[in-house]
Structure formats: C-alpha cells, structure tokens
Length: 302
Image (tube, one colour):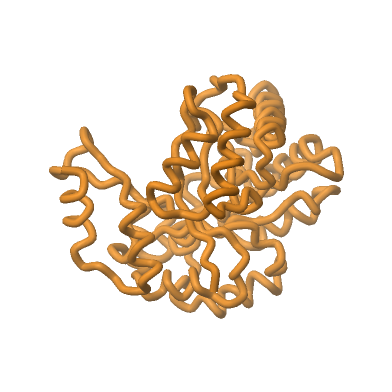
C-alpha cells in the first residue's frame, strides 16, 4: 500500500508553497496541508508565481502528487453566523481562499462548517448551505472538504447527519467532500476504535466516496467529551493501534492522511515547542509504537 501521509506545515511570506514543500520533505512526508495565511486573520500576501513553479518542480522530483495536497481554510470563516456583515465577510473571504487555491494549483480546501452562535442548529445549517450555494456557484473548481467537528460550543458538523444536510442542500455538491478528523469524531461521541462500523455508518448516510481527506489525531479526551483537544499519536484515548487501522484501511488507500498533533515542548512550557511529525510518521510507517516518542523528539531538537 502506497501510504499518502503528511502533516500541517507552515506557509511563509518569503517562500510560500516552496517552503511548505521543503518542510514536508524534512518530515519524510509525501503530502501536506497548509494555511495560505494566518488562520486567525485576513492578511494574505500575494502569491509568488515563481515560488509556486519551483514548488511544483520539487514536488514532481520528490514524488509528491499535488492532487493529494490540502489547504485548510482559516478558522475565522463562519458560514453559520446570522450577523449579515459577518456572514457576507465569511462568504467573500472563502471565495478569495478558493481563488488562491486555484492560483496555487491545489484541488481541495478543508473547511470547518461553522458555529450557530445561539441561533439554533437548524438555522445555522440552513445558513451554511445557503452560503455554500453562493460560494460554489460554478460547477467546476476546488473542492471544499467539510470537516467533522467535535461539537464544542455551538459547532455544527458534529454528526454525519448534519454534514449530509449541508451536502444535500448545495446545488453544486460535486464540489463538496468530507474531511474526517479522528480526534473530533471521538470527542463528538463516535466509537473510533470500531472504525469498520463507523465507516459503514458514514457510507450509509453520506457515501464513502465523499471522503476527501483524513486528519489523523489522537485525543486528550474521552469519547463524547465535545472538547476538541488533540494529542500526539498513541498517547491519547484513541490509541496507536486504532489509528493505525484507520491509516492503513483498505477502503481509504487513495485518501490523504494529515497529522495535526501538538508540538512538543522542551520543558513542559510553551516557550519552545517543536514539531513531532517526522517521528510520528516514522512510527506509522513502521506500524510500531515508540514508547520513547516524546524523549526522542526532545533529544532531536536539543
């Protein structure tokens, strides 16, 4: 099985997509995910076409298929919001992100469906579908992967039924897929340790062909906690063996798997933290849990 695995990587003003590719390669990845700018604000630098060209050449040389690379939309986009100004802002900003995806040559962009912020689930879901009909007004273009959410606060997309409602109520839903997030599924109350059953349920409700990518994360929380706190692979409540079964599942061979696990601190503080991805991916490729994972990461960066 040709495992398609990567992680979240940075996208800097100076190197853009080229820097993202270099970082992914440093972790021995063959795909990756990135934000095209800071996830918490609207500032975006102009895309450097020369850097994009260099990035694509490097990907081709290193056997990274750009079709497997994912963009993540910023958190500040909330399509469920009933505030007209914020709602219109979210629609326009998402349109800009899709345009940037096209300029970069990336086919898929992951989106948090939105939070209803007190107006109720039904109205929030209606707003999301309505907004996506505006955003996806053309039949062709980048695909939006709706992410399964943990249900923290007023988050929508916490059940397969909510995701199905959105998909069913968008006209050009050929441009909609789903991003499964293992931590979010666990925290939403799904039994991630019995993944075959979960996948069967998803297939009946939405259709397995709609899975566009998977975020591979362990969880700090018990099933159904609705907290959304990611943990490093094998250290959380989901566990290494359960995640390995998902990563290597026969029905998901062609789906990109992306790690979003926490950076590791040197001393338990937050001042100096380092990416765990190279070490986690090594474990995943070996299919063997490294009990000294955190120690090995800290030794590497000392």
